[in-house]
Image (tube, rainbow, N blue to C red; front, top):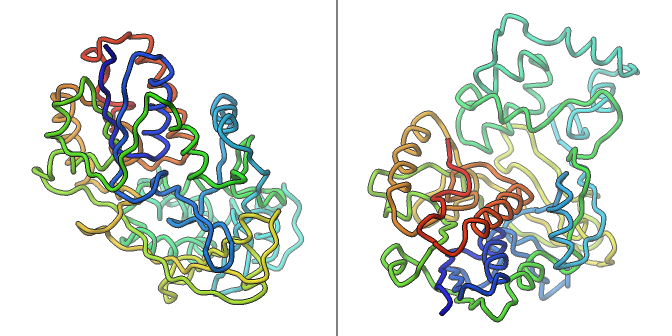
Length: 384
């Protein structure tokens, strides 16, 4: 008799684990999804009026340097090449991100070569900053005040809702400075967008006779007793009904507008000035340059602290959050028959490729451990 597995959440974490376990032939798997669609925040759908493929919860460009992850997603759908070239609107004009040689030369009105630009930017840095402890320290030490104030301070404050001096330095490390003319937002070997969208791709991952899907169905801790193992991919604190308090997340709201033609000439433009309330505008037909559409659909994106009824997007991970996280992680490791996996359940900022990679790695560990589900780990990766 097959062992029963419950998976709460139909994003990449839940879908990959479900498929990998289903293919062993040892398990019967129920996937529960609170929303009326699969794919979580990666959900894509055709706009009924314009036919444009919309990323309903914000832009998702797939990028990875793990060949096994790239091979895995291509197994379920064709990917078209796509390079994300983000622009930044600042008080001094429009520039390319990440900051690169063109950005530096345009911003300072120079024509420097790579060596000259590297020396120039090094001279801008605030050398009174020792080991950077915060986002602001990191920016001032390596970029100087002008670049920090124009490109990062306002945007970061809007995105995270706190002063950059309260955020960890590691956040800025995700946006490197390049001393060449490469304006590719990601520094990854493989990049693309699925031709039919992410929801179609995840639907194929979950298309297996051993997998049953339950949309519009919330899964609770009490229901896990009916299963040999549960995989929970929702917010870690929600599993415990927030008994120790709430971990802080940032959430997003979107202001949709339409027009004819091409509204901004690019998929994503960041608005770096603090006086502009939204963080960026995404024009979604630019995510599918292989398609042609006369009309266009855009979304202004606003960031806010997630309330009880909001969709959590990014863990805030301030000092108090990390202390509370440790308490929840300790509780989780005393739970019986539950594994916490994915971005929300491990309270980490993870891109799609990282979630898929961790889910594949976890699934391989589980299969190697055998069907004694009591020996399976409590976390895909224990959060720190």
